[in-house]
Image (cartoon, rainbow, N blue to C red; front, side, top):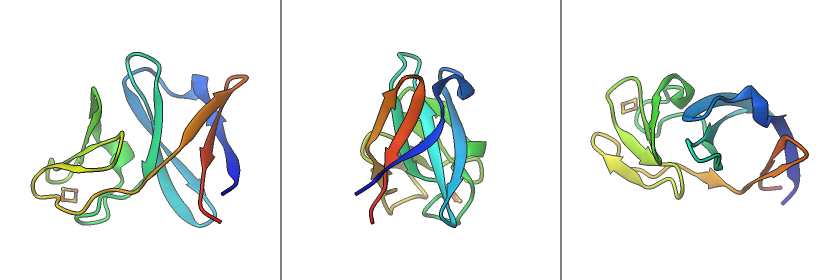
Length: 104
Ligand code: FES
């Protein structure tokens, strides 16, 4: 499970989400109001819409298309119409850079 250098922590505002593409896949990286960082797959499990275009509210990301919600801490589905969980990934910050642990 390699740690991949993603983006600078300063590139994301607090209470915001950013798209990150790597290895032919799309991810979403989140920064909370309290400077916690999380990462998940970047596409909604409902209809493959980019979650980085959605709205982050505390620990929930709201999909921009049908307003389904996921908990960014564990990917669980929080509001219909999403029912399939989002995959999440461990994140660490080191010297201002965000690293995401991806499967081999
Ligand atoms: S595409 Fe995300 S809730 Fe429908």
